[in-house]
Image (cartoon, rainbow, N blue to C red; front, side):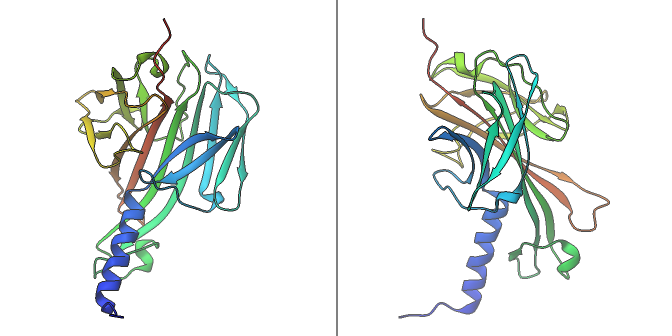
Length: 242
């Protein structure tokens, strides 16, 4: 058997770590009557530590709070709202990542990595729409969000859903949106305008996952140069019945 050079192994591992830091996303999905928090990239569905899921918020159709519990599982987390939610948010801490001088990535803050070329705090968010005409209330702790500007459950497959992307409550311009994060996770469907707005075709009869990435520079953080954010908007795309 041919053995790979150690330098190539290190480079490959670094690329994998970098992909994990940047590419993997977050969404929720109903499976066997449970709401599972999914961490993956496209069709990938990876295990993670349940304690990485830090917060969850559930609301009824009028935007009133519903209690929701984060239930740890062996390799992921599950959400258990007190009643059926109209909308549901979740946040995951992806940890600190730094790029070493050899351009490989390690899961450490820059204080622990001498000569770090880059460093980031990875945070992921997701908003799921479960019921028609849901009033969207964005929790203050959710810094990056895709807000539908029409009821996604009423748009219909093949038609365009208008959205607005917000970063710290303000319109985020020039943000690339992946309209089918599960089926084509690296294919950009649209880019936001100066008001953070874009129009995304609804791809699927079943679960739709619209996703975006952005970053935010930090000036007074000893461990990271920037926040690296991922966010997703999920809903079932069955066309409205006449």
